[in-house]
Length: 297
Image (cartoon, rainbow, N blue to C red; front, side):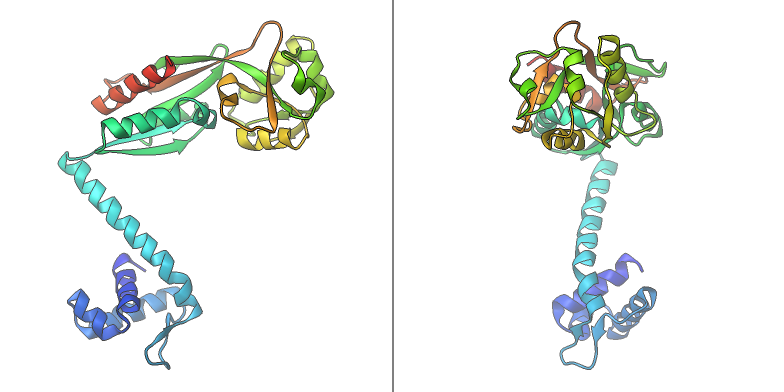
């Protein structure tokens, strides 16, 4: 199966017949029939019921048609953008980010970047902080937006741009008595199971959160492990436990979860940008400028 075969198939459907499709594609009718047969052979089934006039789509054809249209549209868009990048008419910026920054820096920064540089193609790729440096080396992303707790090891071939110091707060079910308090102590959080996230062997966030609670008088019992922050907050909303998140996450977030500051020595996380120590491209430099401006608000 290739794009040419899919294009012929979609044109037959759109035109209503193989002959009309051949005219619109400016190829011989025999070539249309051959490419359709090749496509059906590769898929292992008939796309048209040829016993009807006009031909009607089989179940396989009905399944393939919308997906083929979407695939062809995406291919055209990719080709146009790639040609624009190759010619210098367009730029490309790929951003890796941790999901928690969707509640603070990422949306507004990307919006401003798109407004100021409409000819820049922006790709967003969610990934843990621990994976971002390697993906920058591979060229998968140009810049990462990371979150770390406490001291973290800096890669020698990367530069780190601090953006936000973000204290952690307790996420508590809205109908729990602790949700009404202005602050809570770590030991008070023992009344509910702890919801640990992200569930990933490379992430240190969960273990660092638990260590903080233990060092400040709590004995947390892990009741659930969530893959990512929104799942963890959903479990909190369901009354299944508590967790710790950055204060910036609380802004414009769920109304069925209370975000309560922790009394005493607060645990802070740091949100920062990471990119290669090689001179960043002008596109990356401009995005860093926008990030820093948003972080100051």
